[in-house]
Amino acid sequence: MHTALHMIFVLLVIAPSLPAQGGPPAMPVRLDPARSEIVAEYRRVTGEVRAAQRSNVAAEIEGIVDSISCEPGDRIEKGSIIATLDAKQLEIERDRLVAVVDANEAIVRNREAQLERDQRDLKRVERLMTSGGGTDSELDDAQTTVTQSRARLAESEADLAAAKAQLALVEDRIEDSTIRAPFTGRVVSRSAELGEWLGEGDTVIELVSLEEVDVFLDIPERFMPGIAAEGAAITLEIDAASYSQSISTFVVIPDVDPLARSFPVRIRIQNPSEVVQPGMSAAALVPTGVPVEGLTISKDALNLSSVGAFVYFDAGGTAAPAPVEVLYSAPQNRLVIRSPVLAPGMATVVEGNERLFPSAPIFDSGQAPATENEPATAKQTESTDDPAQGS
Image (tube, helix red, strand yellow):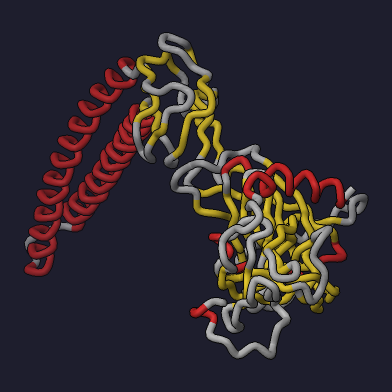
């Protein structure tokens, strides 16, 4: 199967460029061998994108929809008006309570003035009693009058406070008749129409925030050592949004599924362009914490074409293509790959590959090219000719 895929790869991508006999001279390149190395194992897991914030924005009071200013798909800024409810009756009640508050404030002022007069009268009687000109009856009457004035003032102050509280409640309800966006987002759906009666708590729109989104991954519990290791990173991929990023900040949710033996990991990503949408599928390469033997190549050897990734390798002095599947990144600027052609020790082209074509003659830039009768290879070590002079 791998051999058939390799032949198709060569015929579709590379073969049309095969040079004729007596083609160009050997091209200088730099070579680096594919290696078999012990690397940290990564495995692919799947997940989904979810909105970091999602809300059914509801009416806080009942009323008829007087205006509504958004449609599904619209972007709404935090605090902007979504809809308004008819508040005429509330405004009338507010005006009535304003008058009640004014009247009670006037009563409080009058009773404060009356209390001050009664307190002055009491002081006069007390002075007379000191000089022997007053009676006990006059003193008792003056004290009683002050007590009654204080009680009437307290009563009027309570009435004023109650009226102000009622006014504040109505003003809050008037404010609640204007429905505003609780955060910046896009309208997913609209549940209310102009002229419709809404009850308290009825949904007006569904709003979703896209500036930040959460990706939830289902990770097998056996991978926990790799995830929990210091400096662990996850390579997150969302193909539908052409998103790929190495993530080192994530949250392990302590809720292992007893059947699947997996646990969720949440990754919050910034999404200012809003290309990542809730509901998209996601995948990730996660560390397992297990060392394995893998085939690695330099990142500089990798080439991309319309049918996949490939590298050029030295096939006895000529460039030959080898399809590769990149599994994940490894330290020291290398990639862990799978290939039906490459094997450890095979020399891959890491510099000069942008000019190559299949069967192009090549030589290591640190060695001299051979003559026409002596083809150069990547393994020549004894030649001392200057590569720049040719044969």
